[in-house]
Amino acid sequence: MAKFLHMDTLEDWCIQFLVESINLACLSNLWLLSQDTASDIMQDTCLSVMRRIFDDFVSTDLFASLSAEALLQLIDNDDLRVSKEEAVLQAVLSWVTRDQEETSKGEQKPRVDNLHQLLPAIRWTEIPDESRKKLCGNPFIKANPKCLAFLETVNAWIDKHTEFGDEACPFTPYPRSKGEELCLVVGPRKTLDEPLWTIEAYNPVSGQSQVVGSMKHRFDSAIVEQSGSLYVIGGWDEHSRCRSVEVFNPMTATFASAAPMNFERSCHGAAAVGHNKIVVCGGENEVGPVRSCELLNTRLGTWTPIPDMRRGVQRHCVTALADGRVFVIGGSTETMDHAADVVYCNLAVKTDLGSMNSNDFWMEAAPLNVARHSHAAAVVSDRIVVVGGFDLVSGYTNTVEMLTPPSRPGDLGQWTKLSRFSPGQNAPSLTVCSSHPIAFGEGGKAFVLGPRQAAKLSVCSQIKAERQQKPDLETWQWTELPRLSFVSCVQAVAAIPRAFICDKDGAEHVEKKK
Image 1 (spheres, helix red, strand yellow):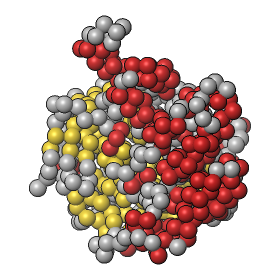
Image 2: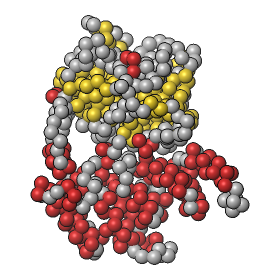
Image 3: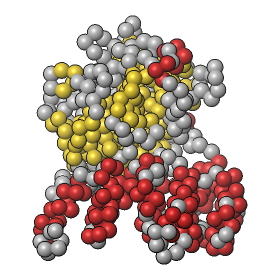
Image 4: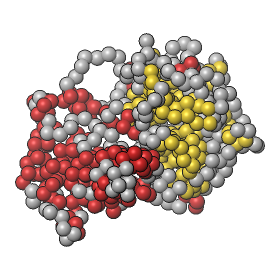
């Protein structure tokens, strides 16, 4: 109505309101509205949401109804959040299979005619060789000479890419994960008793920072990133433990309430599992360390109990691998202030979790080299890196170690010592940003774990090296980065693609640290 009456200010206000409230439930209606009103802002926001929840979005009717132009805009982007690149390829082929249904609705030409324009948007170096070469037998590919010729060029480039220049690559020759990421850091600016915590977007490459939001302090909570949003779970709300969950959307800089946990808890651990679940393990209640665990389905908004751990634990770390295994590492138990225990379960197993007992569900892994609590952990190339915390000997510790997870039944995995921090430094928070561990310590100090300076490689050489081996973390060293500009006592950190973080006018910025 505002557009029809040429009320531009009201129209802008309406669009801004709709953009800030967008989610999967209303995405279809807002996408149709963006097409009807030719609103670039609304359309771009819808596409950003689609990229952020891509694994869920591809199963919707809206995805199946996208035009070829919109689908290309969606997938030809570094910020597409996808579990694996094969999912993008399968989504494109699934979209093409809807051809008969959509052409009967009046589409101008068969969808397969657009396939040769969509295939270059796939990051082909991330597709397994066997799957890529079998694709030439796909009926859609075989029936389209342009597609067949393109795939033959792709296979030739990947098989013999050292003979080609970088400019000869027929597709984007690097993974989507190399799109720029920022660290979202949560905590008070000066002291822990401040009523509000700041949410700071920090660029570890440039040292630039921006305040993107604030929240009421929530001591001993678990803060987890899932699908581009931060979930603030449990902890102390004012003067009591709580089970509430708040969700921060960095794209709109707004909070919303989510389904509360089944139990109140603090000092618990949590991790994102897959693309729509969060697992919460252990913690503390009025009695002491607790054993209970529960699983949040972020899409459905439901919490499901999973088998209790064998003993209660608090101030521990919880991490999840891509294969669905969840590891609970260290912490304080009913009998030990500093534990080295490591247990894990597999949430990818297709079974009724309620029917399993704790001994069958939870398995033991190799214990830490250094027993500790209040430490930090993150997954780096299917391995788990643990930093800092408090140990039995020196109080806080600057030791760092890495778990190579169990590879078969009965295997415990293996812990390996990595490079320490500088003496006197502790790192209570850790994330992985652009494939590198970034740790945050006291006073807003930041550190990156990475290889020693090496000669610059061509894109081709980088692809070959990355495809052949995992990074050699044992040889990597810690390097200090520019300090945070706003947060001084880091409570949580997560890596988020830059495209998912708002940049509002009037926001506090620090352009460069010295």
